[in-house]
Image (tube, rainbow, N blue to C red; front, side, top):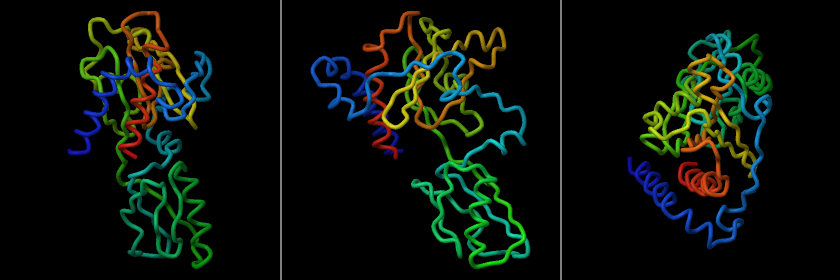
Length: 250
């Protein structure tokens, strides 16, 4: 609770001060070295942003990638009640510690990829015919929803609810002035900001699933109050909020 208060207070302070600071401070200092020139992703480009269009549990399990705070269980054929292989939490660094296998990085891997890595690790010490890796609990994901929404700030989403529409709903939906047709999804990858526009009105009214983009932990969803987005005024200050949020929560 204390941590959440700190995050909220820091974000509100940043929102109040960023416009003034942007006029007074060099960009490289203000935004902690992040590249302040954004890459605008086109409507048909799905390399960075993908539609949230998983249709079944089997598809979800196949595509899901392990993440920090996920809890997994490992089942090895022929080893009943193996100690140390139940309810293993992936740490903030993406690693787990297992008997025989030692420290293994699993974050970012699919369940099949994690299985292959663990099979290789265990095979050095044990002869096993097969194993399974199951997620017993999914770690929380957090995104920021800012701009013209009723409750701007950080929202927590379940792993299977990580999309723009759910994030906006968690933030109390758009205000009277919010332009739902011009939702901006912002993602930072290796110090570079990527932006893609999502027309959530078309998703709701025309069932255009390509508009309901899948989100990742730490993404920013920005709802503008006009059709014309002023990058320097509307988007650039969000970099400072992002870096503050990541510094406190990571």
